[in-house]
Length: 475
Ligand code: SF4
Image (cartoon, rainbow, N blue to C red; front, top):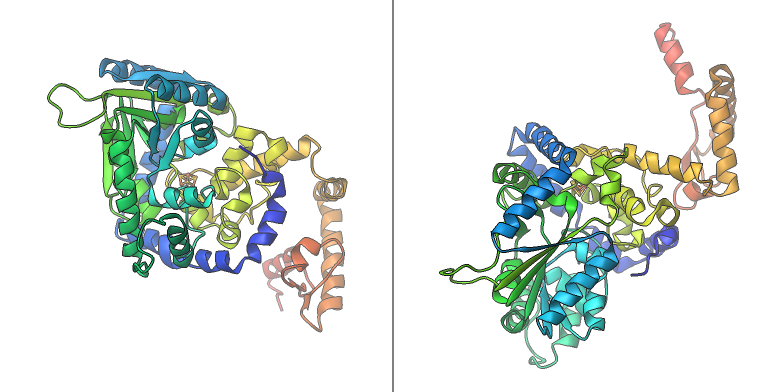
């Protein structure tokens, strides 16, 4: 899969100029953001629940190897085949081989960010299989040849009119004059097309939102029910997930699900939360004949011993990106890889290396909204700052930026000189800019003034005002 994160700035510029994308993104504040706020308001203990959820995830991650072993033991006892993959290549190879061994020609897939991470569809198609995404958003993206732009609403960058055009272009065997004006018409059409695929599939592949150690179960959480049809109608069910998804007990799951649904879509609980434990048993009315779980590491174990370990608590709710002013302006594709928004700005450099992902921790205003809404209380701005430091220490930023930062650091270590210089700068800029009250251009500030004006300082620095207030002589 091509990794294009170094082009964040160019991607963002194109996204800002894309009127259709801007129309689609305009729905975020009134949609997912408002729904979360309403759900949070209905649950007074929401913040206490966040503390509990954070602690539960920390406890499991602290003993991750133990919980994974318990999970494997219990899953195997229930008839599952558990496969361990250290890298994306290994995971792809295992899944392709499993599908080949089953003689699979048609593979249905539920939504899975890990499958995006390892580029699974391309690998299966190269091996001669037809792959069909069954989540509505993912299906739309598949027929457009695009990747997801959001982790829970993959097609959020599209408008309804675009989807209608795509359905008319692809579903050519349906009557030309059919009505596709209402969202329900589009959903109905996708349902009809996908139903044939569910029934004909040889292998169904899903992700897992969580794994439960005490029962050896995998858990998927959906609103469409497509994941359930994917995993129960095909002969073989393959789960692809990462090692950080394990929870200790079903009780822990119940707590985390309360946070996930509210943070993601503002629901009290998601429509379907399905636990799968092994293949179909004698007497079961449905379920696959074989059940495989592929557990991917891909750099996560290494994160455990570092200051980035907190990112592993993530439950992929998407709240951080919904509330991020940068994501809301440029959408998910600007980030150039699988995980967009603040979580992507922390996780992506960890998975692909800071050399390739350096632009992402810089794609933030550091306003702190992501941390404020994160149900797992992940300190995303702090972790992005760590990446910026790593980037700086690796000598990657341009010379001008490094020189400016070195000069600022030298000044900041000398408070008297720093205060004198800032007083001088504020007074000078205040005098220059007092007539218009703002600057449309200033040397070295092109990144800011290209898109907006810079407010002229009022003439005195914060420290001056603060000192005067303390002395009781504020004017
Ligand atoms: S970082 Fe937090 S808010 Fe963002 S997706 Fe993960 S759990 Fe949700």
